[in-house]
Every structure is written in C-alpha cells, then in structure tokens.
Image (tube, rainbow, N blue to C red; front, side, top):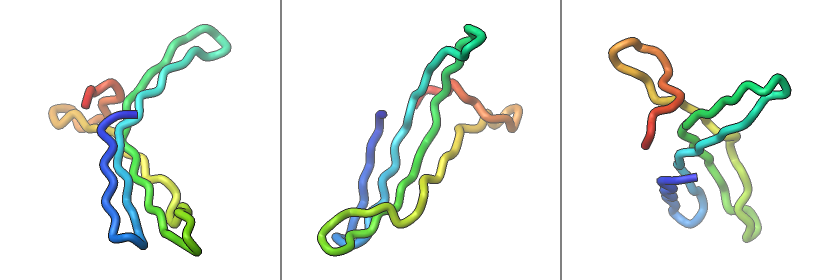
Length: 73
C-alpha cells in the first residue's frame, strides 16, 4: 500500500490509496498490478465501520484508452 490519503469530518471518512499486488497462479504464471482503491467509512457508536464497499480503479493509458495495470504511482 502506498500514497494513503484520509479525509474526514469526524463522522465520515474517505481513504484513497494505491495497492500493488503480485502472485503466482497454480500453473506457474506470474501476475502483478497496481490499482487505486477508495473506501468510505462512517463512525457509528465510536467505531469506524465501512459504509460503502471499496471502489477500485485502474490507471488508463490515454494513448490506447486501455487499462495500464503496471503504471507506477
């Protein structure tokens, strides 16, 4: 996780960050990607709870219009 940014008013919070994942499939092929996540949380009875599931987005190569899964932040 990198580039974490949290904005809050004390009751609602939005967290934005870049996540890098890498792994190996059962067939041995490797995969990795970077993507941006946004979480919305709400403080309820003193606890921060997820108010909206994650929103995931990938950077776009403006030349091709396709997702750029290995773009570096």
